[in-house]
Length: 151
Image: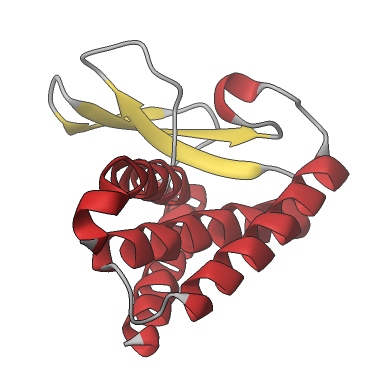
């Protein structure tokens, strides 16, 4: 079953990197294109920080945090490979998101972001960001119900 969790991560990393490549190749920096009217547009930005551009330019900090995160996630994923599916999928998503943005930071010195919500004021994000967020949500939900699901 561990293979499936690594496959989820691998596919998401590939999709994230492909989408970033496509955005950089087809949209000018700062340009916005309608994607799903009144819901989502594509806006190419370069983010050298985290969400809302906090900690801008702290590449070494993000590299260290990412390496620690990847190590911890791999440990729990391998250790619990036959455990709760929600937890393991959450860990797979966290792994994909961390690695997807890490590739950008190491290769480019910034993260390529592109999805802009039209219905609310929210930071522009990418597939890796979405994977990280959903993964953390899954792990949080698992932690709330862990005792119930074990019994």
